Length: 136
Image (tube, rainbow, N blue to C red; front, side, top):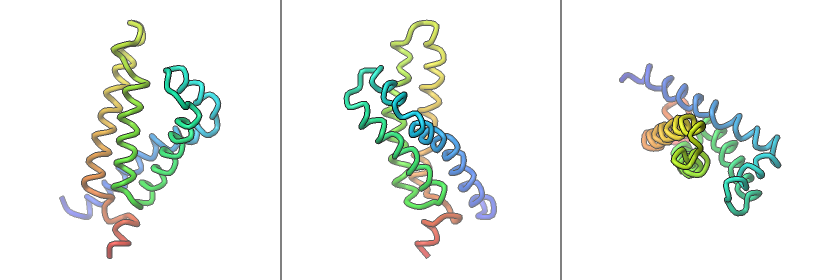
């Protein structure tokens, strides 16, 4: 694929990840106590620490992807975060029958997001990024 197509696609791909993670991080910040309660509701320990960690990962990771700065590391951290969160918060196998289908959809959507983040970690941010500028 030619760079004239590849570079905009890398950038658009990064923006689409930002569209998923940045609003989620901001909503965790704005509704911090609700986030803590939700984390505690699934039985995880240190819910306050987990909520703080989640919002930092989502906000800082999103900003890193937006700028294309430390993209490979940010994508790996977001991939690991997404994968772990998926198993705790979308465990369709343990959900009531009326909720299992939606939880299964969310589970596999997150698996796909994790896959996309791993591809981004492997390929890098593309030429329209601070990573590319710093490597010149």
